Every structure is written in structure tokens, then in C-alpha cells.
Amino acid sequence: MCGPRRRPPDRLRGPRRRPGCEDGRVTAHPRLDELIRTVHVLRAPGGCPWDAEQTHESLVRYLIEESHELVDAIEAGDRADLIEELGDVLYQVLFHSDLAADGPEPFTIEDVAAHMNAKMIGRHPHVFGDATAETADDVIAVWDELKKTEKPHRTSVLDGIPQGMPALALADKVIGKATTLGIVDAGEGPLPIESEEDLGPLLLAIVASARAQGLDAERALRTATRDLQEEIRAVEQERREG
Image 1 (cartoon, rainbow, N blue to C red):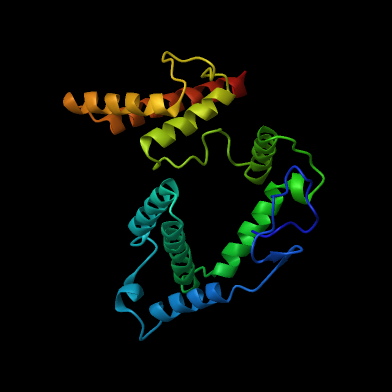
Image 2: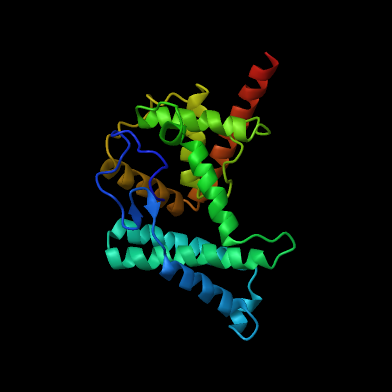
């Protein structure tokens, strides 16, 4: 994203301007337009038969695979790989958008971009508005309040958490929500872990031990996380009734 409509405070402004953003104005992106056209041609009559047969559902596996490959590229720190894998994920977004343009309730990549731009501006009132956020924690607090306003139908801190996340990522997310309710004390824990270098081998050892005993570590953690979610919902219900 380019810079905001007004000059942001020094504490939030990056050290240098990004290519394509000059004095708050966005320059043209001809290569992106070419890619959008390529996606359309591949799906159009006379294009690629495989592309023409795809649906949102059939592409899910590829979106997941490409996302994992992007994570690998980020962790490897290789510039060429990062460019390639970001492109693969971008292609998935463009593909789904082109599919949607032919759907019963059509929308295009322009609609996707417009929605996201409005969302990001709305989620950053400390940059685009008059709100104040001095720290990253302040920003998160602002986001949480905005989400409550944007989605009043959500009655639980758990609403909106994708249950299909990998078990460890899901557990981390749910524990974070539990901590905000005081159900889990973020400052206490039975293991004296001080770094990721210590934590990694411990997690690996737990998985290895589970495997040796014929246990499914992924399912076990997912079950425990589901139990914690039930506890969270019960506490929320008690507080609403109390």
C-alpha cells in the first residue's frame, strides 16, 4: 500500500519511500495489469482447458500450498524465491477474482482492492484520522474496538477465528483470546522456556514421544484447544448473565 492521504507522524512513517509511491501518489502498475489480462485470457473461451474447469473450491488446495511455499521463502530469506512465491499467491487472488466475475453474484479484483483499501484506512484511524496510538499494543486495542463496531453480530472473542488453522497456530490464537478474559495467565507456565531455540526442540520431542506411543499430536492439541474454547464460551456466557 502507498502512503496515506496526509503525512503520518514520524513514529509511524517508514525510513524511505517505496517504489511506486511518490509524494503520496501511486504510479501505474503495467506489469500487474498484464498479469490480470493473462489470467482472464487463460480462463476465457479458447484459453487453457484446465484453467477453464477450475472453481473456488478446486483451487483451495493450491492456495494452501502456495501459502506454505511463501512461508518457506520468507524463512529462507532468498529474494528470488520471495518474488516467485509472492507472485504465486498473487496469482491465486487474481484467479479467484476472475472466477468471481463470472459468478451469480459477480465481483472483480477492483472490488477486492476497494474493499481492502477502505478496510485498511478504517482500521488505521491513528494514521488517517484523529485517533492516537503510540505503541503497537495501542494499535491492537484500537483494532479490537473497531472490529466490535464493524461486526456487532460477533458475541464471542472466538468468533472469526478460522478453525481450520494448524493446531499449534490455532492454540496460540485461542490462548491469546483466553488471556484477554483472564482465563489463562500469560505470565505463568510450567516450563522455563526463554527462547525459540529452547522451545523448538521441546516441541519436537513432544511430537516424537507422541508418535512413538501411537498418539496423534495434532489431534490431541486440537482437542485440548477445543476444550479451552468451550471454557471461554462458558465464561463469556456467565459474564453476560451475571
